[in-house]
Length: 381
Image (cartoon, rainbow, N blue to C red):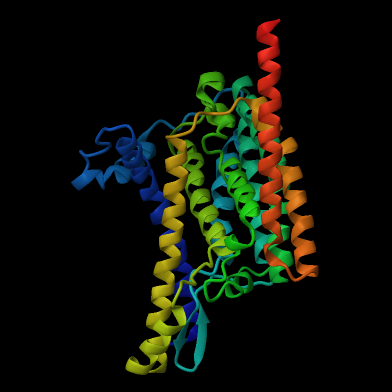
């Protein structure tokens, strides 16, 4: 088979699997919420409620497609389209597996392999906020506009800390390519072991970028009705909601690549050598690649579950708390992490970034004790 055809099939498969996982994430979210809240969740549409996403899609398609009288019509339509487009583009450079041997050619399990992969992801995700901003502004609704402004300021604030956390990984790997970063973690040498603070910062910023609880202030229903998508209905609303789940998938995949080895797993070389000995070079290599793909998707699915777990566990921040955490907490911590990572590389002490964790914990404990003393003084006064 022509390698170009195989590559096209891989691209279509990645796109289809992305949409399928995002679709059934809506079902999984309700099931996880039901389990945490001691109830059943969806169980009427199909066995175990598995047809619920299709029922939701049908409902969205057949709802009235309403556009407010004084809204900017074309921008009103363009907003959710842009949000959906940027969400789907983000996974194009993610390596979901090693490679397949097709004839005499090696075909990567990746839509596009570029040497600026993480920069591409960062740029595309940054464009997503324009979809929210345009939709909120075009609605000609004060609550929608407030939600859009919140989304823009929140995303800009947390993208700075996210970028700084990624810089530490780039320093260690020496490349912007996601595949190179993943291959550098071969043999269980995962970056989470050397970048614990970078991982915490990146994960927190991923929640903020996806507008997930406790960072879902742009669509805070207790203050802004529905936030930036208050005026939306039918599939335009569906695009906004669906883009959030696709962003969860992409964020989980990037997190797995940067910190958890991507498609690498302990004992990978031994499994591949055994398969090649028993089944031959091509077949053994391809089956080993399939196992790596399964491991990668297991990591992604756990990441999506973690997003859901946090949503139904933690309360929402106040907006001032959210901005303080971004500017006064995460950005200084990320800068400290970059400095200690660079020092660790120069001194050949890769574990030096653990010192940043101890410093941040010490500062947090000190701040908590000082604030507690201030409260006690205020109560006595």
